[in-house]
Length: 176
Image (cartoon, rainbow, N blue to C red):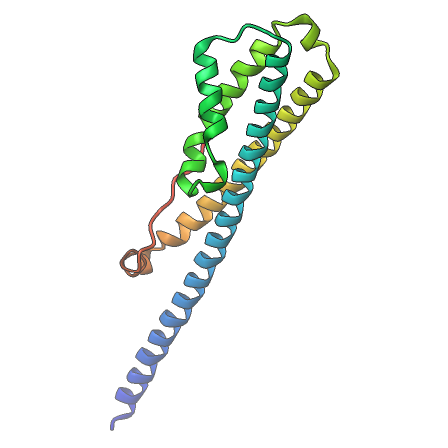
């Protein structure tokens, strides 16, 4: 065999080995991002469950104070009470968060209409806990979006894009 042919085959084999090696690195990096995203989604699910518990507790306090509650809000709170956040899949967590936020805001606005309840220690504690959970949720969403950017970068990596899409990897959406 000619020397140039052997060196050409060695060079092609080396390039193929580097391509495969880097593909393994890309797959491992994607797996790492996917694991981080799964943990972040679970953390957001737990934050939503805590928020739900606080809103339901405040609603119970409102009922104990015999404050007039509009029927539409009663229906929303009853729906919230029957919703099992622990059973949400990854997409329902993100879809339900704005709805829970709207219900929470409505319950807190209703509670603020009562002067006695507004000054109570319990209401102030609920309000503080909700604001802390909201801040933590915003931080989790910011970190989640940063991880989404990294995940999507590696999914769109030019030389492996078709292989990765064939393996079932697809881009993920950022949260607002």
